[in-house]
Length: 167
Length: 167
Image 1: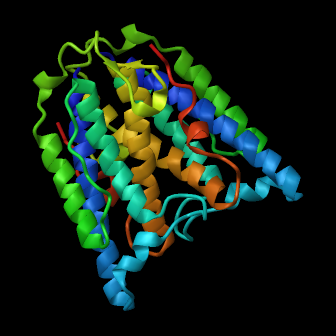
Image 2: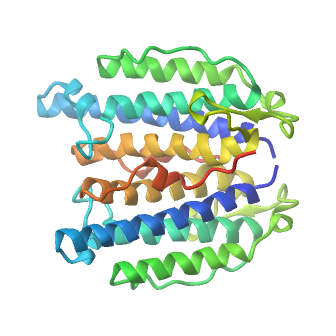
């Protein structure tokens, strides 16, 4: 089994998040409020607002593939001002993940990953993916979804999971 | 790479959730409210409360390993009344995951998974794990965490992620 199948899932879930933003915008139109109000919504005063949750979800996916394979990730300045900007950010990251295929994730056994925050420490590429990239990705993705849900947007588990691959 | 590394991560995250419950109980004691009030807290009126989020997190982990390997999962009646009952439920599932080792996840290519809800449809074991079990696990785990955070419990990302394995 290759890490690539988990990357394909990240891509699907990013598209699901894009669909949840569409539902949020439609909800705002129905209730006649500015959809961009949701950008600054949060679940606790010392927790990131929706805009940062989406940016972080995108970054975790981007860093997951680039760090695991040893490539330089593209830079994104976190300057999104609208829900439409967030949809573009998601599309950019989905496009970036599209550049990766299963062969990029072969022979990871000797690869190490580190980040500037880790003060010289490192993890194996697999441990980084399993213990850091993926839990962080799901953390921010689910929190973004929960912020919309908390604000009354009509999203459900199916919007989160997306279409399953039947045998 | 074996699915087992992702199972070990589920186990670690369940222990993290147990630690978050400890922090919730301590917070309740400091603020002098009954910690079991948090059992029925939710982020939206039509979303599961904390108790159901924790039960679902446990179930997703339990079903992940049992369905992928073709074993019969143990039954848990969802009758937890207190935060302490939830800690016991988590410990039970962690103990169940402890029964599995890497060899149990070998040769999954031909295995199919189905559930009573799928009306005869099935998924490959790997697709089930990647597209269903794991996203559902993280969905309920993160929502449980978010409910505590929303209610003022002093938990942070480190409490969620747990200890990383340095190289």
